[in-house]
Structure formats: C-alpha cells, structure tokens
Length: 432
Ligand SMILES: Cc1cc2nc3c(=O)[nH]c(=O)nc-3n(C[C@H](O)[C@H](O)[C@H](O)COP(=O)(O)OP(=O)(O)OC[C@H]3O[C@@H](n4cnc5c(N)ncnc54)[C@H](O)[C@@H]3O)c2cc1C
Image (cartoon, rainbow, N blue to C red; front, side, top):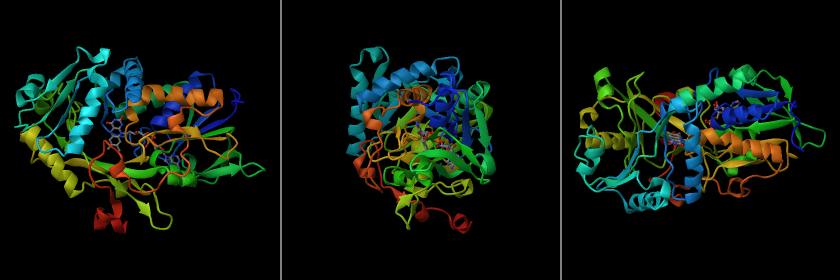
C-alpha cells in the first residue's frame, strides 16, 4: 500500500533527487511532506548541483539514456525550468593528442544520435579548426587536431538557479523545509517493534520526527545514513575552477557552445551576473576512503573541499584554455573546489526501496555524475515508485554485493586514475 495522502513523508537531502521528489509528490496530492537539509540554505552548498552550470546533452553511449534525456529536455523547456536552460549547443570533441579510449567514447556518443531522426538537421561533423570557428568565432586558439561534432540540440542549465526554482515551487505547494545542523541534518532512523521498519528520523538536535516513508536523497553521503549503501555508492569528487572576466569579455563570449575536449575538460558560456567562466577538467576524480571500513564518504566540512584544485587538473584546464581561448590561459583560477557526487560501478542511478525495511525507506542515489540534466523528470520516477509501491526500473535497483572502491578503468566514459583525497588535499586543510 502506498502511504495515504496525509501520511508524513520525510525526504532527506534537498539536492536534485530530493527537491524533484518533493515537488512531484506534492503535485500528486501528498500533503504532509517535509524536506530535511543539513545546509542552512537551498541551493545547498554540499549539493553536487551547487554550481553555475551543468551540461544538458541528450547523447549517451547507451541509447536508452538518449531517449530519457530527450524527455528531460522537453521538461527543460517548461515555465519552471525554461529560465535556467540555455540551448547554446554542444561542441563535443577530442584534442589532437587524445588517447584512443577518449576517441572511441566520442564515437559511441555520436553514434547514439547520428542516425536518430530528431537530430537530422542539428548535427555538424567537426574535422578542422575552421569547422569550429564557423560555429563559435570566439574560440580563437589553435585547436590543434581537435575533431568531433557539434550538436545544436543541447546546452547547459544554470544549476544553482534551477535548484532554487524547484525549492521555491515546492515550498509554495506547502512542502515544509527544515534546514541546518539542528533541524535539517538527519543523523539516523527510528525503528518499529520488529527492528526493520523505519518509523521516523532523528535530527541533529536529537529530536525524533515520525514518518510513514523516508526518502533518502543525500547524494554522496548515502552510506552515512544507510551503511549497506557503502558497497555500491562511492563518494567521489571532481574539481572545478573559474576565470573571472570583465563585462566586455563576458559579452564577447555570449552564446558560445559548451565546449568539451574529452581528454582535457569542458567550459561553458560565462555567467552574465558574475562574469565567471566555469571550467571542469576531465579525470578519474578523488575518493575519500575511511581506512576503518573501506568506504568512501564526503569530507565532513565544506572548508576541506574549498580552494582545492590538484595540479594535474589545473594543467589540463590551462591546456584547454591555451588551445581554445588563449587570452585567458594564464589568468588565475578563482572559486576552485572539489564537488562530491555518488558514483556507482556501472554509472547507473539507484532509485529503489532499501531491502529489509518493509518498504519504509527509499534510496535515491548513485547519480554517477550525470543526473543533473534529468532534473525535470526525476520526480516522475520517484512518484511512480511511491504510488505503485513496487520496485522501479530494473537497472536502477539496489545493487546487492556490488564491489567497493576504484573502478575508473571499468567505466567507458571515464579517463584517468582515481586518487585518494588524502594524497592531494593541502596540509592546511589536513589540520582542520
Ligand atoms: C564537478 C561535477 C560536474 C557535473 N557535471 C554534470 C553535468 O554536466 N551534467 C549532469 O547532468 N550532471 C553533472 N553532474 C552531476 C550532478 O551534479 C549530480 O548528479 C546531482 O547533483 C546529484 O544529485 P543528488 O540529489 O543525488 O545529490 P546532491 O545534489 O549532492 O544533494 C544531496 C543533498 O543531501 C544533503 N545531505 C547530505 N547528508 C545529509 C543529512 N545527513 N541530512 C540532511 N541532508 C543531507 C546535502 O547537503 C545535499 O544538499 C556533475 C557533478 C559534479 C561533481
């Protein structure tokens, strides 16, 4: 039986999964929804989505996800999401020195849309520097050997603003939000007589709040609340950095496509409010394994990840700029940080009931670094799971017995080695 429309539902985490679930369930008539978020604000700074922008592109190596993202892109064009979606197009490339793995991945992405009727008039193959500057004259670097394709049916979302919009829409529908360490941080569950069914949550101030259903949507922190999730979800981070531009520079770069050289990293149209141009390097990322149990958790404080930009990442970002936008190649990077997400060994999400809880706990996690683009349709997946009270999509089930640890080599679209956070964090942070 699904919960009754007036039963208390506790959603833990106000990121992409948590906010979409809250909005969807309130739209379906559930009237007693509370969202618990450990940060004092939404968009929450611990959320992997707390960022200027995220790529929204439909091509995937797996055509199943291509179909899904095409639905999501329709959602990005609705009144709630539309102001935050910018269809600048996606230049998807490899540099002239890319490893074979990157070139093959690019080829598989391209194959998923090349013969797809929706994309017929919207794809341009890229084989030369001129092919690129015909699309974006501003990319005036040497672009040596860069090749791939341009997809006009893609772009990016302003991610923090989209999170804020969904938060405000859910609050306007009567969803209650509890924020901060005392009221918003969930520290554990309360169990019924048999010891399996969860009947409530405990917050930072020790208070117990009853719940008929608990939806855990804490991203990279999944194993902090559900220890068994630690064998299937690895807290992993990638770095980001920004270049601060002048008004004129921002204006000049207006409309450039998301530009992604798979072996180096990607950059976005600058944000006109802050004049920040965001860059992400491509790499295997960083995990934070607790030697006591072998599980990777996100660091406890934001301060530990702020300002961190490992030298190898910085070198790839500088090369990306030197080859595409050389006038910024030596400008300092600002607002650098590591951004933590929930990685799984097969890059599939987890949208399922937690076994052994008698249907009282749902886990939404395992975003694997590619969930944001789905924001407009994520709530629908959760709504079906709750309403139908049965397991959802086969590939997003709870993954019993999955392997722990580093699996960068197994994931076709990832390049580079995954390293431990302890090996790259600054000595100052280590003492905090
Ligand atoms: C650098 C980087 C680049 C990315 N680029 C893209 C991209 O281009 N396109 C794309 O589609 N996706 C991208 N992603 C992935 C996307 O950001 C994530 O998939 C998405 O944000 C995950 O959503 P989530 O709801 O699972 O977790 P989150 O958004 O991380 O939210 C989890 C929330 O739970 C809260 N929380 C944690 N513990 C507790 C607790 N005990 N009590 C209460 N609250 C708690 C946190 O504060 C946080 O707000 C990127 C990710 C990273 C790191």
